[in-house]
Image (tube, rainbow, N blue to C red; front, side, top):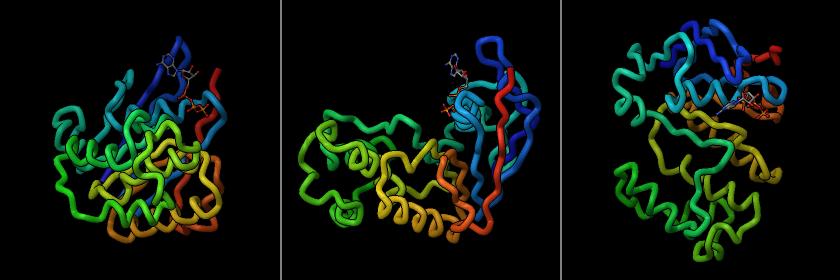
Length: 206
Ligand SMILES: Nc1ncnc2c1ncn2[C@@H]1O[C@H](COP(=O)(O)OP(=O)(O)OP(=O)(O)O)[C@@H](O)[C@H]1O
């Protein structure tokens, strides 16, 4: 599904990684690990096509993502470290916004999803007034309303309580069983939950 070919990234005259290559197939999950500043977010942003690598190529279904970015974007769900939620809007308004942006019609499941994520009773207040964990749950709603094959997630467990973490792990399993793939950074130990977990360790390079 995804192929990273000899990718090099330089930031502020520091080479974060050089000639990095790996692949991710349907049903696979990969955790990118490494110390603060190693380049995990930079790598995810390059793979998502938000930033350019100094060298190398990213292919999705054997096509360079930059050559047909719209096609790639239709298969991608990216949830960054910053959640991408509009704090001025309510949870329901954020859902309506995402549906409009992705051209998804309403399937009548929004309230059920809000209930699943423990957000009932909070759907009509601006998201900025919710707790950090509740705001993260609003951001994660996209995982239940999206058919993207490739999920790229930067620290998705941030601020979630134990129940939230378990719910997200269960959602990951559903996605993988449905033939999706997941690339993520997290400080959670996922080895007990995902037998098929691949890991990529980025060292901090001087
Ligand atoms: N837009 C940018 N302009 C200049 N330097 C950047 C930019 N983005 C990141 N960097 C630098 O690249 C390095 C790697 O940052 P990055 O956010 O990728 O690390 P990380 O491994 O995700 O760190 P953390 O674990 O703290 O989230 C840092 O030293 C950072 O200062």
